[in-house]
Length: 338
Image (tube, rainbow, N blue to C red; front, top):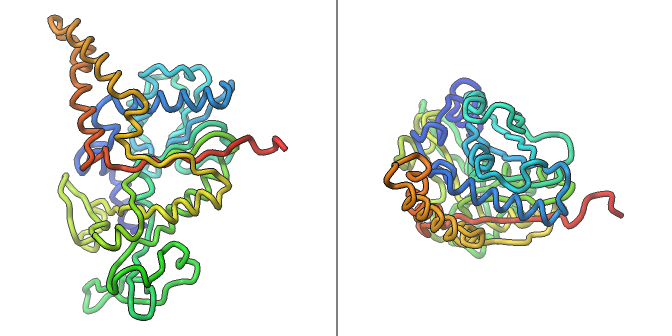
């Protein structure tokens, strides 16, 4: 999976695929400007909660081509004068595209990996955890086994192997699922949360992804998916590097990783609920008024206002983006406060 997604020359994201060109799948920032405007409101709330620090750092992990950062800046957040955006993106192609999408002189840095300095602000990951490297576990009569990949007569085959003891904590009791059920072993997500939590001196960790309890995933299956050209595939072993590989994220190891990082879990909601709390209906109504005032002119501002209702329906659709989970964790006070 690491090679298929992130190989420097042949990996899916390294080749510039994904949401940046809308060719394979669409994430919330790609629906328009509304999501970024609402994220800007969430950032303002955290800045105020932190008593308006002079330097407020927002780290966006998996930032792609900078579309969300652009819309946050366009929204003119109250924290703007203090805001420093750090865009973390592994894909060289996506990082190169950021320069053309963001305004000159914007308070933005672009990095390949998380920064090393402590963060006072927000670390945001929108649809990142599902793309971090994970293994696959299968329930057997003798406990959990790991599904590994082998070659047989030039064909990729699956081979069951012993599960590492350290991975057992990432899975529910095998007695609670049916024999043959499979679950993701989200090692990459747990490791990333540990790193992000260690960076966060004060503020919040904000995770947006498709997630569910592990037993739910084991029962319904379908959590391992591939995407290419807006089509869903079923075979993650075919044509590596051509399609995205993604998983629903089990909630239990995410919660455990948050606690292990010394953070408090302060909120779990659907994206629809979260955006409602941030005032999405208010922004849609404001957009309607802008459209009515400028419809005769047909200018871009009026057209953007009219599109908000469509964007809102997509962002809050319970069967799509609106059903994503928003998980917020918080460090109560700055380290060193005693």
